[in-house]
Image (cartoon, rainbow, N blue to C red):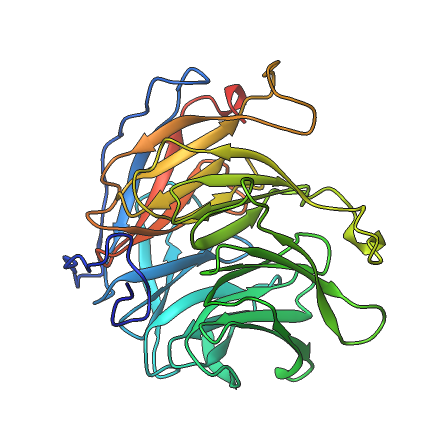
Length: 390
């Protein structure tokens, strides 16, 4: 079942959110870790709760420097939060700007360009807005139109030359970023049979992955020297792929592995080290399923993020919980090409309702941001010896 905003819930009904409207933050105490796997020496400390949105918060995105956190909401606004000190673990985050007027419906996703000068916001109004953030000034410099329905996710490639968007219209669009804040659609990718929930770029290559309500992950690459793109692989192996909606995706720092999360309550890790540029239709270079992380979340897993600083995987779900996983690097039972992971920390009731998004800080290995249906953003600090698990 889908809610009035177009997003399916895991149990067919919408939980009434407890929205807060104040912009001030509140600090908190340390929370529990569990007692399995790698010694479980990590805890999460609530640094600050950021309030100001008047509807559920769908997504958060760190600027490349980590100085600014963007959040987007069902209230049709995007907020920019900055820390008044140089330490992201201090409880001095404040809302510095509210971006309004760019959309007429829910803003579902937001993402910074690699140079931190542009912020893209994707909306249920079927448009993507691009905002220029320079010298304290913020301007809506472009509105990208073309999707036939709600835009669900937005992502920039590593060089900032391409912007990808995906929609409930089952399509993925790739936009060419041109001088003067001009954007031209260079390719419309068709292949998914249902709502496309999420797009993410490889951290070093112009390879795009998309996740869908059709339970599949598709891998897209440029076809030769032209502007055409094609699906080079679909990750939906019988018995080895997800059996329900795939909500989000994240690469590790090198792009050699990908983690996905799903309505089927699992995380899946994929070996993405094969060079798909050499595929040439031979089918020999393939990304492969590596392991499934299951038995932890008991409701839909909406978000997953692989830290490129500490190597940990964070997940957020409709069970209101945040969990953190680390790889078992000395697991002798793992088969060649496979890996195993253990949960090294968790926070029960991280938000009072669904955790919609988790995002690791881009430079600080201990800072994690989350967003929830309760209308808040939370900044967390990982406490413990990261060298034992990362």
